[in-house]
Image (spheres, rainbow, N blue to C red):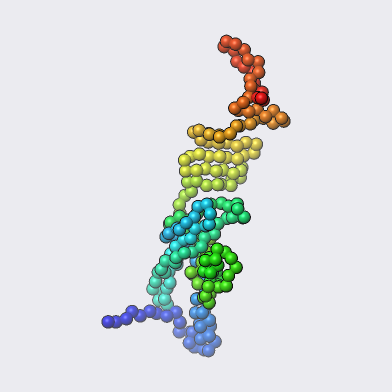
Length: 220
């Protein structure tokens, strides 16, 4: 049974002088410390209202030897995710399977911090710059087009969903595009103290027969 060999990354010049040998050793040690990598989300656990989910990810940049032969990484499990949140205010937009994004890697073991619900903790081990201590930051090269989003434009803000419903904010106006608008409470219109209620307003100058009423006025 023959074993499989691998080409190292040392070049012919790395062994020509003591300084070159030291530089090669330093480069090899620095290569063990990871700072950030692109990844693909292969599973999502939890999420929604409450704590952010964790994700399982696959690094998208392969390992290579000195000859360029590739060795893909395995899956990294239970990676924490970032959410835009301040206090009890947040934007919930959880990752989806297939998303391609960036994972930042903590310089110390954060497993104890995650297990303690964010309470100040000692490092879980002596490992440093390990991909298991990554935090998924969000997408960077996601090819999917958005079918619902909040969009900031030159004229204002546009909100649209996958059902074709749109709310557009522009100077002096808000345009709502929908087949039906349901309001559980009242709608009040007017300014300068008019306060015309949609549900309880009265009509002025009501005439019998085929006549039309006057404009509405505040109800009682």
